[in-house]
Image (tube, rainbow, N blue to C red):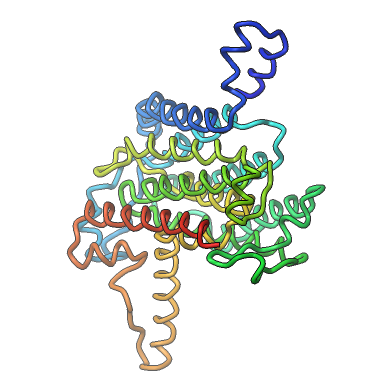
Length: 379
């Protein structure tokens, strides 16, 4: 939208054209998107919270029988309004549309994934609240919808005219593309993209278990990908850093910065002790947005580093379930590797205060984002 305003004002020339000339630059529009998303979150935060309270959208807390000791730590959170992700998504989409050029197909694919998974999360949250339990959409149903969205987005990206070669190859972190690269994944590209989208959306969803944890980690991860998008869209920088150049990707910088601003604005209300939870509405949308952006800038594998906390949370659940089943076969009775998963609950039960877990995980997320950016120069 801002770029469209520049185009309209530039036609006539004169003073108005000079004043709006800055709107043509990606850097200005990206910073503007961040500020606008943050401002929108602050402006509408209280209203959204009041509306959720009036609609009785209180977060259902798992019973003492389900979580034992954790109920003593989180029981007081019962009734805190959830589905606050609508605030985050609203700020993200509004600021993203203002900051990005609308003739960019990558933007619409990213928004499709974000809104599609956000809608799935909304239904999941609605069922939990209406039924007053933590079940929501069945795991099978949730995975099915995630795969449909992931495969649809992957297919459209792979079949975009002129983009087949760009998306069919895989860039590897730490390694120069002249030394080794997967040059053509063929139709497996679509499946691979779906795996990234499904995996990332679930990983962020699992991370959203403590006040501000997912939102804080999103800020550092989205900021890193904003930089990835900018250098990928800049011909000279991409050539110097030995990464694949694509002009469309540069425009996604504004979307990433909008996600930074929206997450920071939401964190204003979600920080410990939280006044509102994002719920699956927000966490699944965030995961989808990060995954789609990572795919578009061809930094899918770097997401394992930049989103290291999300990966750690997901792996802890996978390991716990696997060890639970394996130990039952080996020893005749199931055993736990962690006190509880996702892993942030393990540290809570080990005696860490909730605020300590949150801030320490934020630090790890920031370190992961910095290491991810460091892979640019190592190529």
